[in-house]
Length: 106
Length: 106
DNA sequence: AACGTATTTCCACGATCGCTTAATTAAAGA
DNA sequence: TCTTTAATTAAGCGATCGTGGAAATACGTT
Image (cartoon, rainbow over the protein chains, first blue to last red):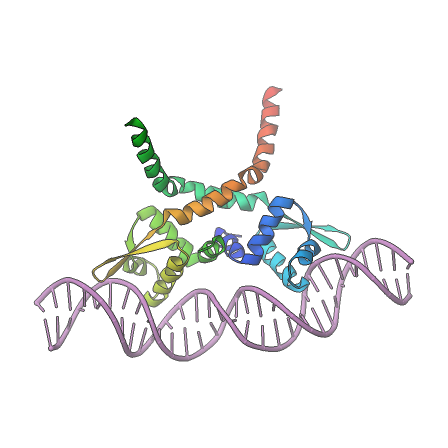
């Protein structure tokens, strides 16, 4: 459940797509994802397991269905991490911003 | 060079540690990382290659040495992505915040 | 030219990944 | 109870990953 595990879990096209779909649509059943994607149910189930074990999604049981949703804590961990270095990754934008500022003053 | 590739590259303890080290110390030679870690030079070189191919670090040549540093663009991609969903991952904090607000009003 | 330093590429190996088919579990409906 | 629906677990397979040792490459120094 470390940040490495989080990144590893999201480092796969299928799983990143699942997470983004859940972030847009909210809670969805495993079958919903199997329906529109061209992926077998076992394969999808495996991806959900990886996401669950990484702490990215939680599972809620409703009769036969397994409803999945994204854990805000997981997203927050990534958010906090990137914000820690925000000054760094905005430095090139800052430079650009300064150039624009200087241009304006002319 | 997609976001998936970025996450995949960071989904490894050694590589995440390398990136955080570079973010703290700035530009470092491959050998510097080999020195303090208990990892062989070939293994370290491979990790740098993965990070480079994912667009996370850039290599600058100085005589025999290869100096590595983090590309702000890569960090920004993660930052922007998480900020896209900021409202979502701050919702649980918001709820906590509201509870605190209500408590204050009493 | 020969040597030392810094790093990468090549080759091999065991471990893990992503997927499929088949079997299993579990709950709802007839 | 038998069947259908929803999903997971089990087993097996090729592909990729992470690593180390050995060799190769590249630059600087003597």
